[in-house]
Length: 292
Length: 303
Image (cartoon, rainbow over all chains, first blue to last red; front, top):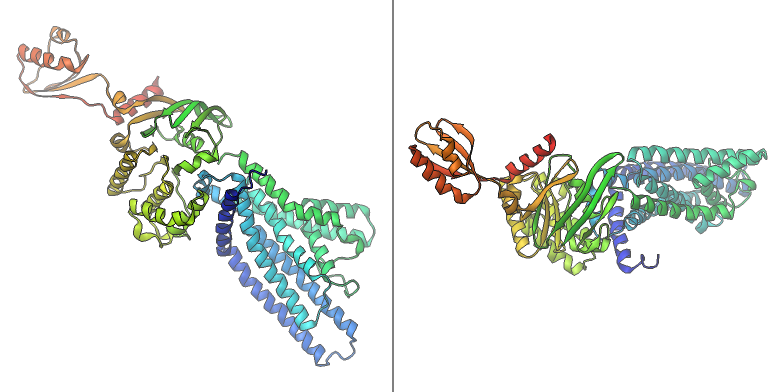
């Protein structure tokens, strides 16, 4: 592997990544998602504004400071799940055709007859998309946290770790989608990745309910789905890191941890960090072997 | 040999794409690769440039085994289905390819201007590719393939989208590249174009090479002479036998006679005149690439 990582290999990866980053910004899915995200943030900000105005104006006079903090935390947790969902869908739909789209249209035939290894090409695709998704998810999650803290003085605990985990969510989905696109047609890959995302989410909910009612089978289902796609597990871990324990009024906010037993372990987090890299390694291998 | 293959075979599942292809292309040649649709031309080109893996057999390009990425620094490829990111400009596209080729930033700019000038698109450097016609995109593809001044160029149907002027331009471009020592592997349906520029050719049909060699060798076929007569006439058998000729076609005022070689033409004319016919003209029939192609492919299909 050492010889692979020469300076020239890094230059080739960066060339593909830079072009992929530029192209990803131009994709309609990203443009549309950016517009919808702005609308969503405006709506979320408006809700926070009116809530904070009533609290500050004494309209809800009976509330003590702890209750106000709890409302702030609840508003923050409520804002995180849809944000994560939007970012996740953007990750899937911007990545599902990353390789297959260029192969189907023959755009890839030019670059892939240059002195670039197919593994470098796949890595470049992932790095470019990951860079775009990192910027996008940082902007979305940063805005949600910023709005909740700014308007409601929502309490936050380990902000840096939480943001890092939020950013990891789209990278996991991007890794799966890039891997899929090295073998599957774009549409089939899109359906598969979205279904996998849904399965991961449902598995997470089953795990949380299993945690409440102490049902080991349900907990195991959640673990298995987390191994298939650890996005929901990472989201729960991120929320747990972000919000101080004991500040949530009601755990009904989607994706919010229901209890300590449903919080993913350190091993699961380590697996989630390795997951996109494993996917990309598999994608490199698949593309290397296939005929183009 | 700049390209050499031995028994190169490709199966797509059960379907045979290329069957034991043995090919040698000398350095500095323009090599024409011909064949009907679906014969396996693109399969071979794709194996040579490393896009698909052979099922069996072996080959070398530029002294390196097939699929070796280091050889690709010294070659260029224009795919048959040339498609580029429409949102890029040619300058951006060529800069991208230059970086993949490992060219320094200081080299890419001048090389871009040079190749774009050669294909007649120097004024379009900053135009979005999506605004290009198909012919312009094809010329851009040729520029892209030429970017690093490669020793070997693979051009898959390089003039399919060009008008006659564009074809002539590309033909001159290829001859210019050949003069500089570039080897060109030309995959084309346009037999007249191939005949004008190629030194050697190979014909593939139903996955197998059915003819190959230098163009002059392949086009030197049996000597056939067309004789135009003043009045209807049919030569006597002994007249033809005297020059070892065979009557191939006979129209009232036209004969086509096969001879062992061109040396027998004066004797044939003398014998016919001696027999009493008046000859208005004699023309040696020239075998062209189209004739060779049709003969070779139809022989295969019927034989």
